[in-house]
Length: 95
Image (tube, rainbow, N blue to C red; front, top):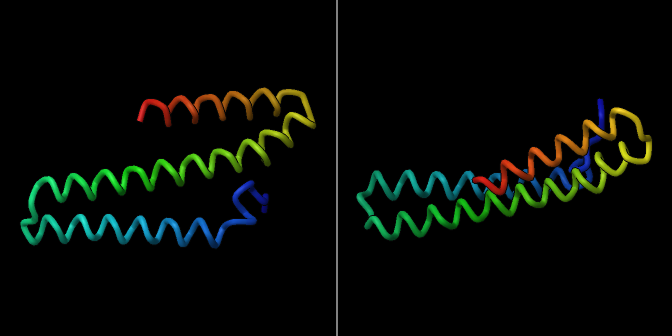
């Protein structure tokens, strides 16, 4: 099995995702409990920011590990990895 760039920080990433999952469950409870709209929107913003931060961290690891390795090897793999990274960055910017 391939070791991806996030492998060394897998535990930290999983913990971070569990915290985000808890934030989302908190949003569900807020709606179930008829919380004030602005409070829900504020929490939604926090979840969005947490996901964006996670995505940027993962992207950085991908660039440092997967893309850098492919560039060192050269060839079509390098072109593919750079294209994939560019497309991922574009998706993040649009979101």
